[in-house]
Length: 138
Image (cartoon, rainbow, N blue to C red; front, side):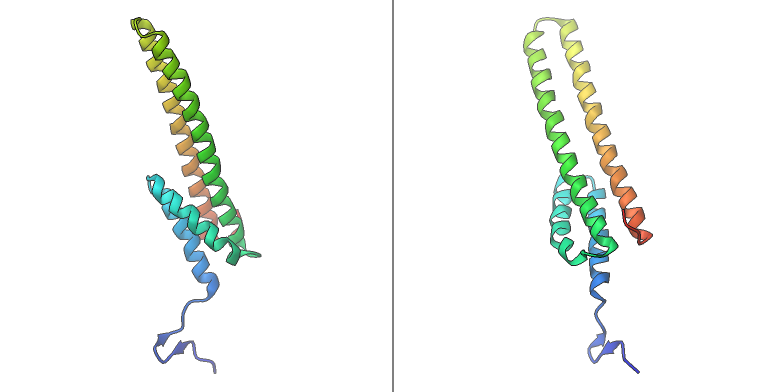
């Protein structure tokens, strides 16, 4: 009969269990509301992706990596357009009360776009985490 423990204690978990924990960790880091945790999650996803090849976990690491890069790209694009548009409008309408109010409204629109992007990021995080708990590909 094979023993599942060593003299020092229980045997270490199987490699796939460690990779599964790392996939959960990435989703946790994405769920936290800071950019640095998402960046750390991206690094972990890239580091673990090779060990997950051929398993359902590979799809999760790919999902996590794509989610990060799409959110970053869209966020930078919306941010650049917002700065250009709102900045130009402030300069154009600097002496007009109605123009300033219109500029604030446009700024609010861009803020709503960032909120939608954040909700999409959260949706992908929750959906991926749900499939990971079910041990299914995403």
